[in-house]
Length: 148
Picture 1 (cartoon, one colour):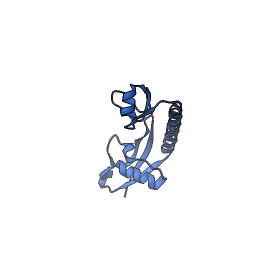
Picture 2 (spheres, helix red, strand yellow):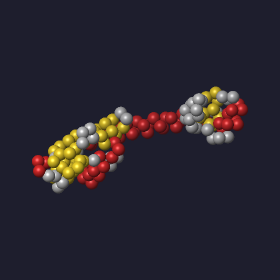
Picture 3 (cartoon, one colour):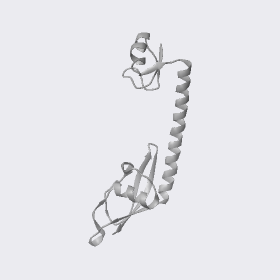
Picture 4 (cartoon, one colour):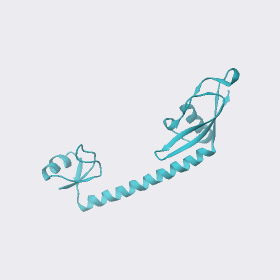
């Protein structure tokens, strides 16, 4: 019997796969535990439509990430820190502070976990940080650190 898997099943397949299993295994385990449905014409068509929709959504997310990267290139976020003599700051600039200032100043909602700071920002000046927007898209954001 052919079955469409609704979730990952160890040693059988991943969600969305069409697998051929024995009738008893399909009826007594996969279908009763809601891990799969019978692969009839209606269910196969639903699967095809769902995959097409998922591809469309993935393409839209990729395009949105590219647009956001282009927007980030144009923006500069200003972060104010207390500083001592010689432009040395007390502490360093965190990704949380950068995300908060980007939201306040430009209305850019950036997840702090996606901001990558290679070297700690511990002095005044302008820095460039990387923002991972999508597995295939990264953007650069300028961060200007000024004295409070």
